[in-house]
Each structure stands twice: as C-alpha cells, then as structure tokens.
Length: 247
Image (cartoon, rainbow, N blue to C red):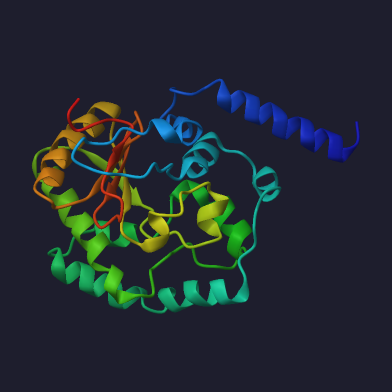
C-alpha cells in the first residue's frame, strides 16, 4: 500500500472503531448527539433548536488520536483569527484578576481560560505549535458567563459534589469547527464544560443544575451520559440535551 492508502485505511479504521464504542468511555457518548441531533431532549417549556456539542473534542482527545491524523481535517486559523485570540490572550491577567475578585479567589479561574487539556494537538494544528494553550474572549462583556460558571461550581462543590476540571469557555472558529463543535454555543463565550470525578457525581450535579435552571440562573445543560456536563450560563438556546430535567 502507498502512504496515502495507508493513511486512508487508518482513518477508516479509526472511524469504524469510534462508531462501535458509543456509550462507552467517559466523554464518548457525546459523539452520539451529533449523529442524532434531531433527537435532542428539550424541556417542554422551551422552544429550542437542536444542537450538537463539541463531539470531536471529547472523542479525539480522550482516545488519543495522533496529531497527524487530526491534521488531515484541520483548518488553519487566518491571521485575523489569530489576532483575535492574541487580543484575548493580552487580557488574560485582567480576566484572572476580575474572576478571582468576584469568586473569592477561586482556583477554577485558572482553568476556565484554557481549552480542553486533551485537545492540545487540535489546538496546535489550528494555531501553530508556538501559540499559548489559552483562550480568553476579547469581549469583556462575555466575562460574566464563565465567572458565573465558576460560582455555580463553587455551589456544587459546597454540596459535596466532586469536580475534576473545567474547560472550554471560548472556542472561536476555526478551532471550534476542528473539534466538531456546534456553532451556537462555545464560540459566543457563554458556557463552560465540566468534568466531574465520576458519572454518578455528574448525575448529582445535573439534578442541582436543573434546579438552578428552573430558577433561571443558567439556560442550558448538556448531559453526555458520562462524567462531563455542558453548563450554558448565557446560551442563546435555552434547552437541555442528552437528558431532560424532568426525567
């Protein structure tokens, strides 16, 4: 086989392997939401559009697909897109100071400025290997969303719910596209993703988040059937997917 044929065969094999693993490892069930976008669960009180969420970010990174394979479908950021990322990066300390002040010095502030830690290969493919692995939305009007997300996590933690890490506040294009993300969520800087210590901890958190959603403290919740949840503090589409708050 030629190198090109080998690469094509490897991509096909990986794709078939992933399809056969749905419903398995942590963060992998999210892959199913892209294939079944029209079956997203929504609360009956909402008129909500369907929405898949950063599928490849979880699939690729959790299963360790190599940088070479990811690069086959990688879209490079333009100069203007890199400039926006760098503009946000120049405000990193300002954001961290604001977040720390408004959350009583929460250590979650340091984590919220980064993409998924497992997405480093896709990030480098998009922006280059020398780019700092941080994403801060340059529009300070969006900063209230991740800061409120941190407060929400503080409240969950106070109830004994164990949180492992947070990530994915802002995912601009084309990075968002490269990880398979939906256009209407993370690119607007309105939400965060959270990985809990276990699936059962995520289920506990989901119940509490549903109460917060009913109280209009947040708008959207994505439950991936794993240890990860999407918390859409200011998402335009107010819905739930993967699981309903009524179930």
